[in-house]
Amino acid sequence: MLLFGGYQSRQNIEHQIKLENQKVSSFKESTIDRVNNSVITLPEGDTIVGVKNGIGFFPPDENLRGGSVKMLTKYLVSNIIEKTKKTNTARLDVFVPMAVEGDSNGSSLYVILFHDRGDAVIEKSHFRLGGASVDVERVSILSKDENNPLEEYRVKINYFHEGLDPVSGILKVIQKEIVVPVADGHFVD
Image 1 (cartoon, rainbow, N blue to C red):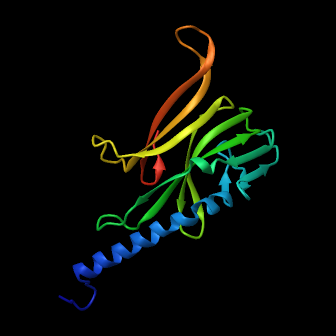
Image 2 (cartoon, helix red, strand yellow):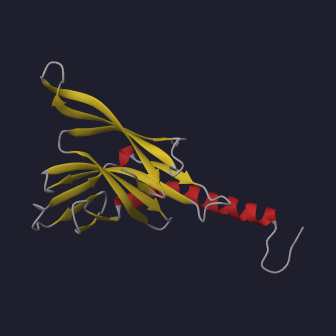
Image 3 (tube, rainbow, N blue to C red):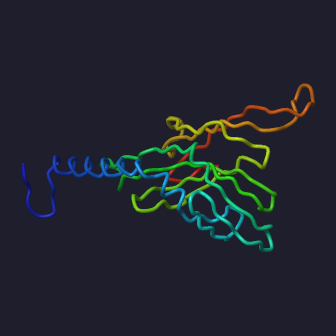
């Protein structure tokens, strides 16, 4: 049934939703290139870093020694948030570990949340895992916690951390994991 004026048929709306979801899913093919050639703001301040071929450099300032960032795209994962009748638009959320050398901690490892628009990735949120002693093993997407209606989904980060064994007190590599909720396209603490 075709309606005139400002109204659209239910089938037409569903068709438009399907087309937008297909368009966003096609972004995935070149997401790594966009992440490797992006602009990020260092989590510790207002320093903007241009990333080219996965690496960017920044000068020293009062908080930073000056150094580099490196996108660890081999661990990149993405999650499509489909458009529905309740949501405004579809989006592709992209998660990439980023190593920073020369920040106020000496070095840090973050997971950065980008939104991929198809022509560029936009940094939206970050989560710090630790310093030089952290090595990412895997980043994965989990379903949302049904007890939290604001969550869209969760991100699980498996990593290795050099630290003291709580039982023996010996310095060793410890396998850890952390689960971080995502709501409205941002990490939630």
